Length: 318
Image (cartoon, rainbow, N blue to C red; front, side, top):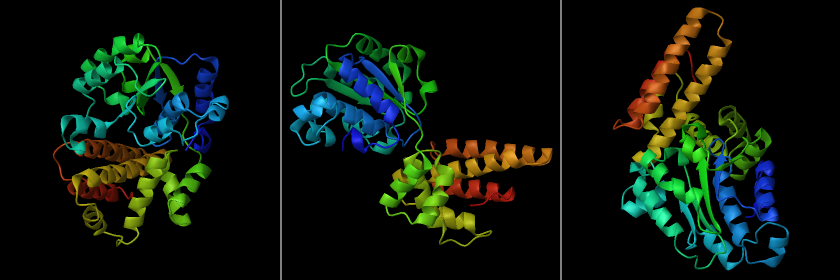
């Protein structure tokens, strides 16, 4: 892949290319925008473009995806380019990925120590931190001096779908690049490329809110629901349709609750009586509670069944 293959983020990409063209790459960037719109992909493509060995690609401010540096970055095996997500942290700590809830201070200290080492293959050392809003306060503070005064040709990219949750001291030291929600046409193409049937794809777009990640999850959920019986038994059947492993069932359960929340809010906007609005507001509060319950030691199937039953009582159905 190269910058040319990324859809819907032309403004952000032009800003990144401008940094390279002017030879003024900021030491720290925040890639901000909803989940599932290409922020992580852009971060890796930017790292590739900074380090691409192909001269023609360098002239066009892009990358070839074929040279040694590009291939290693794509495989996430480049010694000078680190993509630190929950999987990376889990490997550092020899833990399961689903146990990772925050980005811990020891992970940040590991990264800052790496940032002080001399590059072995790359012109630019790049450290990409996914879900940067999950940084523990102690970890964020441990980063400050390293993003403020990094070694030459060292870049930090913090990816966040909830920039407002990040510490102001971090945000003030980073240049913010805003990423836009994807258009319906782009999302429809992505769903079709993933072999989602057209009618199901169009139905999924109602809940996607510009996110390809959400659109794909929703299409999976709606595909499962299409085989279930509507009516009183639906909640139990939906709960039983969840994957068996916790790592897979939690995100699917969260998607179901998000879909119910979206439908409830839309219904609230159209409600004509105060009683309807009050009842729907109570349902929204319940759905917030159910979403938080998924992060605790509660079976996702129980949470989903309770959420759907609560929604059905207010005539909110899929």
